[in-house]
Image (tube, rainbow, N blue to C red; front, side, top):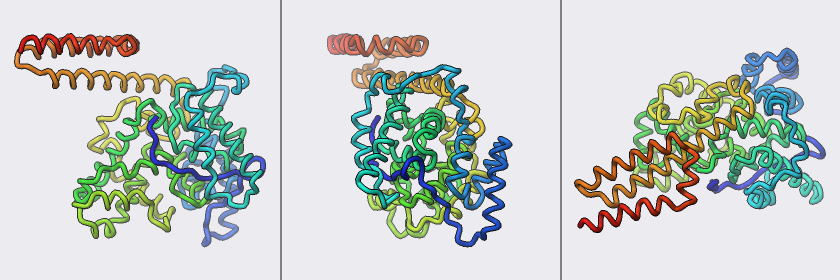
Length: 417
């Protein structure tokens, strides 16, 4: 899968996980203790709605000890259900995934910001744990495509949950929450970004117009990695993951829109005729990042302009995670098998779109007043055939029939001139 100029981040504690506490300088011990008990009670009772409320409230789930209980629940981790009782056996003997070389390159550059007190031996062990986590998930779900920055997400789970528990969590977030990023093409991820102007226009049309010459690709690295690439404090990224796991998949896009809205004055100081400068500024998250205010205002933004009201919403695939995970509870109830089926449907859509583009490009190139009528009929028929017989895509592509098909029409076109 195409990369997204992504660097790398975090490490792991000695054997299992790092113990991080969300920063809450104004919260007293008694209040914090009461909330921790509420989180524990919600986990024990399996009260999903209550747990979502606590995770999204100020300071989130507070510390990793309770995150280790809460995150798997928010993700719906259930190995027995996920694979319909299928036992995979030792992942190490599964076929090698096509992206493992890139995984190794990225893992070698990981664990930059936290923790920062590791010996060379400890750092090497952490990297090996991260490599094994990613490799296991990819081999067990071989249809997924790795993207650069995926390791940033995996680092956070490794730090919080430890090597063993993080496998199921990473599988579920990969297949059911960020599946669009792990397709063979980056276009679904880019379609997420196209919702940014819609959100900005709904909330602040003047700012949206100011940024109209700047493509929203500035948000790619942050949204692609769930902000794990850009946030350098472990406590902050763990806190943000509390919310991202508790909210719908599109929340991360609204989050970036809110970041842009909060930089309104700064952005208006730059002329709209300098999109490169605007892009450069928007690529970097502001520092310091007031997470609690940002989360609260993003929640308000979602409520004020819900996804279905956005102009670009209807253009999204019905198989996109933005539509199949419109709430965290909806995603938590899905199995990996269901996620794999949705992946395949969307992959087929991408292939059909690619073939349609090839056909229309050829139609445009060899257009003629009369001959194109026949050509258009054949192209339409071809599109219908592809839609009804998606497996024919491989035959057409591998057998070189597209070249034969279009060259034949080119000869007819050239011969009639």
